[in-house]
Length: 176
Image (cartoon, helix red, strand yellow):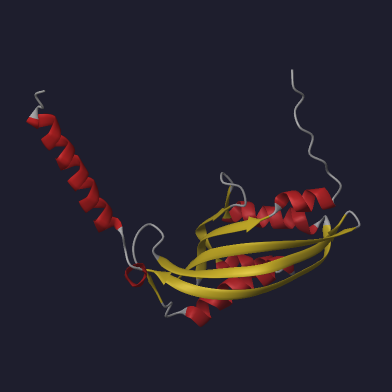
């Protein structure tokens, strides 16, 4: 049986290249994440923004969100601009009462890549009354702060739990 050297050499080259590439892509934590040198100031920006949203201080929110702000979540394709955020909370204000929020925060700095910057993570519970029903909504918010303003954020919360508490039901599609 005769084996051709060309495919064997090509296979060895591909495997060696993959091993070298994967080793170069593995970054150590300390090379990517560092202490946020503006931690107290950045935590204050995010905390003040969240509290201002809840307590209807929209002029303060306006100051704390960058003009190019983009918010993402809770669903994978959800996104919202600064103007849309302001309009959404103004609409929310008309249907919710007894709004409260409690949270804890931590902060970090990303040194490389498209997420580079100072970040604040906030774990909390947003509570409110809507349609006579009390809702507690645990959430996780991570926001990037630059020059004293939030320019990007991502929020996660259980949307289904809130709508079920309000009395909505999920009906599966009919099968043929």
